[in-house]
Image 1 (cartoon, rainbow, N blue to C red):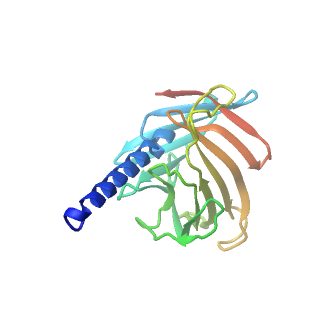
Image 2: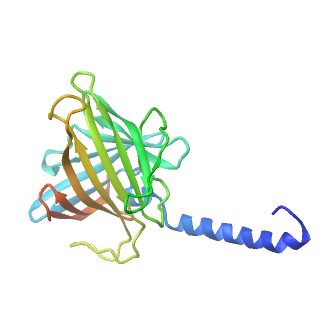
Amino acid sequence: MRMKVIVTGIFALITISLCTGIAQAQSLGTYGDYSRMFEKSAGQFWSGNWRNQWAWEPQGGGVSYIKWGDPDQWPPANYEKFEKSDDGKWILLDGFGSNTSFLKQRVTKEQIGDVSCRNMKPLQKVEGGKQHYVKWDIQSEPFCLEAWGQIINPNAPDVDFYHKQVWFGPSGPWCDNMYHQDKTCNKQYEVWKDNNDNGKIGGPMELRIERDNIFAKGMGPAYIIHNYFPNNGWHADMRYSWTW
């Protein structure tokens, strides 16, 4: 790469190695392959006779909204806004909207580390403090993300939040739920705490969610949801997935 003749073989080896590494990384796919966030996609997940639904609404320009709600009362008013970072490496969480308003979510601190949430290193703020939600390229090694910040409400006290996620590497093509078999999956473990309706800003945060959310390639999120809090042991499986 840097010298001639003698190093030509080394250059070839390095080039082959780099190309192989790139091909392997590309072969794992992207978050878009698993979430279907830039498709007009939807899915329905069931737990016994109870059912719920999600749908992505791509907005163009690397932005997409996702809505969650009761299919019998569709569409819901509320949505989450996600977007691809300017450098294309991340999906960012911008905030939460409704038919009448939009609340920005902004981080004050973020860090990234290993699967055990150790060896954490700071993440620099990007694009005004939007949260690093997940890497766009699927990673072979699991990683942990932690974020602290505020949901900014112009008409009420801001809400403090803490969000921890562990994103795992993809499974092989043997991921089954109650209704589907032999899918390739990507698991998100997450913890969410906030102090919404729990005192003034800076007040104590309470655990709201602890769960596994398993994405299936080509199908979307909620292929399997397993709750640890609330309702420890509650479980739901995606039954239907479609493009609208």
